[in-house]
Length: 236
Image (cartoon, rainbow, N blue to C red; front, side):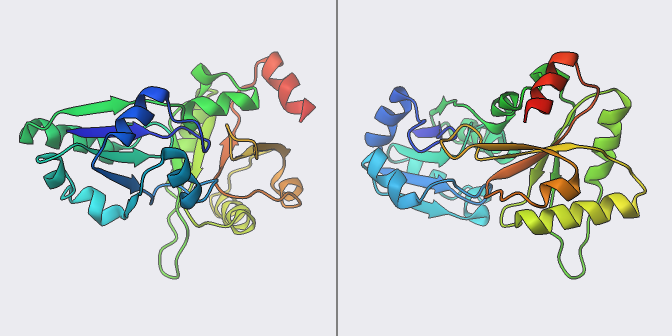
């Protein structure tokens, strides 16, 4: 059996039901490549009272760890909610093919925690991701999604690539906007949402450059604001 477990957003956010499943597992894996954790893995092991084996992207996507689930009960831990990423949906499909029982333990994720900014969830459009630029790889196609959302007045959640420093992310975003001749006013930056380290800031890119935002963090580009949303943002 496989337990696909959402850890939620903070160190002790795992549900009691999921915690029981993890502690009864013979092997516990952790998918660690989609987020910069706001706590240390050693701290998580103490909370779970279980040792953890960390899997990288290739090890998760090749699904070889499911071989263990054919013989014994195992758990795969995922930060946030387990089915927010398409890779994890593929795990469910593979379990069906192999006739492996799979229990899914949902939890809070960035997709719900963004309401802590004061923006209304149902007014968000498509989600985009900003990858870290490399020497010969400078993608900017995520801006197309932001423009599509703006056309219908929707807010845009921009997920920031793991390992991308906040200061560099701001400079990279500013350059992309300049190159694409796209003008954006104030945006929201939210760091470690749903944790005790949570921090939310609202301002222009220049104003935000004075802030310190540790990972994990996201950018939010507001669309058409309801007056209550505007009041909350201005209070920041």
